[in-house]
Structure formats: C-alpha cells, structure tokens
Image (cartoon, rainbow, N blue to C red; front, side, top):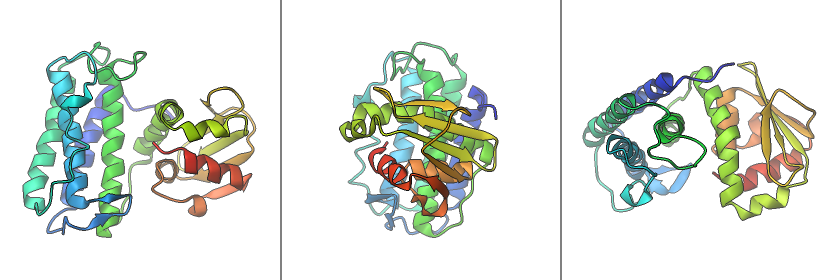
Amino acid sequence: MGMLTYAQRLDTGVAQTSLLVSGLADADLSVRVPATPDWTLNQLLRHLGYAHRWIEQLVRERIPNADRSLSKAHSVEGYAGETAAELGPWLTEGAELLAAAMREVSPDDPIAVLFPDEPGPRFWARRMAHETWVHRHDAFEALGLPFEVDPVVAADGLYEWMTVGLRIVHLRRPEFAELLGAGTLAFEATDVDVRWLVDLTGTAPVARQNKGAAAVTVRGPAAELVLALYRRRSADGLDVSGDATLLKEFLARARF
C-alpha cells in the first residue's frame, strides 16, 4: 500500500472539507462534540477552519517556522450562535486557499517547519489532510450522520500516526514513557494490505511496517484503527488477540 502523494493530500483536504460542509445543512451547531467535549460543533468548525488558515498564512508568507502565535485554532471558546450558512463557505474557502498556497511551493521548501527533519509543506499537506477527515468524523458523530472514508486515505492516516503521531505522543506525554519496555503491538488494516508493528522495548517507541511478532495484535479497517489511535473509538469493536491489557494501556496513554 503506497502513501498518498503531496498533490493527493492537498486534494484530500479540499474534498474532505467539501464533504464536511455538505453534512452541515440546517445543522444545530450548538450541539456538543463527543470527541472534543469541551467544544460545541460551532467551535470545532472554527478550530478546523483556523487551522487551515494558519498553515495557509505560514506557507503563503514563507514563514520559516510554524509560529503558533499566528494561530487561532485553539482559541475558539467565544464562538457561539453561528450558522452552517455562515461557516460552510468560510470553511470551503479556507481549505481551497490552503491547497492553492501549498501548490505554489515545493514540498521540500524550508518553510513552516515544525520538526527540523521534515520540510513544512510536506508535513502540513499530510497533517491537514488527516486533521480534516478526523474532524469530519467528529462533526458527523455529533450530528448522528453516517461516516466513511476511503481506505487508501485512512491507510495514509495510519502511516502518519505511526511515523509522526507516535513521536509526538512520546515527546508530549510523560505518562507514555511508563510503557517503554512493555512489549510490542501490531495494527493490521483488514481492508488494505498494511501491518504496523509498534515496538516499545527500547528507550523510545519505534514503528515499522510488516515485520515482527507482537504481544497483542489489533485488526480492523484502516479508518477504525486510526480512530482508535486518536481515541475516537474504543478497541471493543476491533479484533484483538493477545495482551489486551497492553493495548488498553497503550491507547490510554497515546493521546495525540
């Protein structure tokens, strides 16, 4: 299973935003979002839209580093009473502006850098594609709408979690270090030919594809694995064999 290309990730961000907006018609944006219980749907949509616009500004203005002071994505508590008719076009515009700015630069331009070992455009094209569909899931869950995502897109999201998300969790969550030495976990996507092994036996977690035995194996569609890793789902609906306690502890500590 190959990863999405840079251009495909940009297209995914726009397409997922369009799908999100299409589900908002006449929606009550004051409902609470189960995945982000501190926010209403109104606030979640502002969070996503401002994330798009923050990265667009970083890329368009060729800002060297991912300057968080420019972002409004986590300052959304004051938003209330807005309508889908107001926010839909704003979300669509932001996603399209982001993709347009990203297409004007090389994926490897040294701008908008968050981690020094990866160029900003390449990192953010991937991050925003998956940020968008995961939050579309959150919005649809809040509204009681059916949700699905292309398994190829979900598999790329699994790749991102394993190669970037795991590192972020290790860096940001002190409690995660308590798992080091605990063993290995395998995540097998049943709808695409992908198997990831998370190795916790060293001094830092390591993820690699398709190799090694595991203390616990988790099987399910790629999207369900991603949603479980982002704590949108419990593991109860997945096929788990082996050390279920290790999986429970891993998911409890692996908060992105």
